[in-house]
Image (cartoon, rainbow, N blue to C red):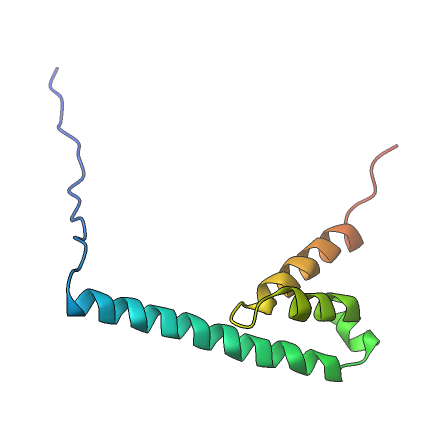
Length: 99
């Protein structure tokens, strides 16, 4: 019986050094901060919606205030809002336990 050699060739990315590596890090960080800023602006606009509209998307006004107040200026509040919406969906649409 013969065996076949199975393996995977991995091309590992070597750590970039010098100016190119620093530039890539700065660009990545800038992109992240810009995305958080845009999401913070969008989250601020949720204050304009009434409670019924917020309920339609699965969050409450308390969730909006909490996300905006408990996240730092450069942090993304949309992560907290999406977590709150998922949690509310689990409880709202959960099937009742069989008795």
